[in-house]
Image (cartoon, rainbow, N blue to C red):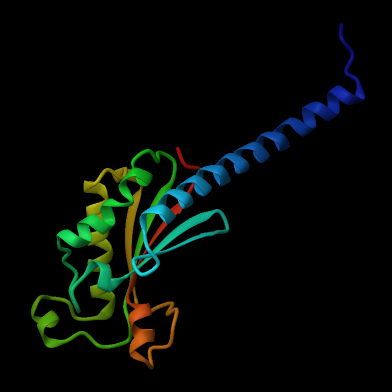
Length: 179
């Protein structure tokens, strides 16, 4: 019968920690590859791509995707979103979270006639529209979610036109280990 030695016991105890380290490194490598791929597809005025805390975030201003005060996308917006498709299609273990944001300007009467009564409604419709388009372009349906945030979490002051423009955005976050 084989008697366990100290080094054997240490190896058995360290093995799970080493495996966890490998998974984290693999996740990081996959996110880093996705980051590089997306950086090569978008210019600075189209999107900002950030790799933070194990998540990859693509931030697009509303003017790239929507007409003023709208939530429907046109062919140019479809092309912008299609740039993400090659990155999203192979993902099988990564959540794709689409969040819509607005500035603090109240929605107008035209939107009220279409059933949009608040910035939260508008941001939800925008997030849903983007999520649906990403799914049409190949993102795994079961991993894509959409959420409207309205005026919450501004990234700039709503006191200036430039700040309001920054706050009107779509954020697509990739969260998970990748393929």
